[in-house]
Length: 204
Image (cartoon, rainbow, N blue to C red; front, side, top):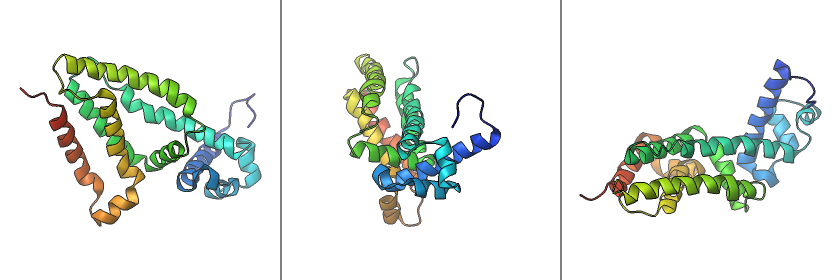
């Protein structure tokens, strides 16, 4: 799409429709399985019209991933060194669980990219993500050293939160097949909060 003038309302609407359609197709089919034709059909646009905004499947994938990474890192950024340690961790757990409930397609797309070896976001993982996790792990280590949290490995604590909360999005079909009519997010918040509260509350 030409960048020498501000986009019109219709252009903004079409771009958003394309990114939403791309997210839907990529999260279901993966990068390799997705096609421009599928994304155009999902967006309700012709293929030439879609290619006016994004010149290739790669360009759409990169745009979706870039948008996704900002969303994905935001909850960890909220961990406040000045807050109550246990409540800060539990708030992070709740936010991650809410993201699995509200953004399952984004979670599956991120998981698919990682399973494929993160060919398009490895640089971000080893720089931006690593710096953020290093920073927040030091905050958690400080809380542990001061006796405000039970002694756990800070990095593995973060990994466990990722794996536990994102399971509800990435394995949604399996979870719902086992639970039947029960909504997994009815009981999950209380369960994960109880789990981490017991794990992290210091023994007096």
